[in-house]
Amino acid sequence: MGRGETSARSRPVRVLVVDDSAYVRRTLRALLLSSMDIEVVGTAVDGNEGLVAVERLQPDVITLDLEIPRLDGFAFLRILMRRWPTPVIVVSSH
Image (cartoon, rainbow, N blue to C red):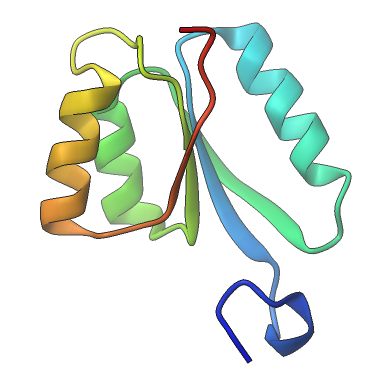
């Protein structure tokens, strides 16, 4: 069975939310936690904080806003994929 198939998993999918909006972080966290198959392991408000969190938390999936301060989502993705290739779901109003 594949990585994304919940029946093959012995633990929830670990998600990191990277977004500068406190409202979006809270909303995504609440939405994701409504599934028993998902665990939100952390949040980050910018790309730099996101990279630190990825290294420390080793999430299975990342939700990412593209317009975040200090290190934008595009730069974050380039570094992430070089260092720790991880599936990313872009959540952006852009």
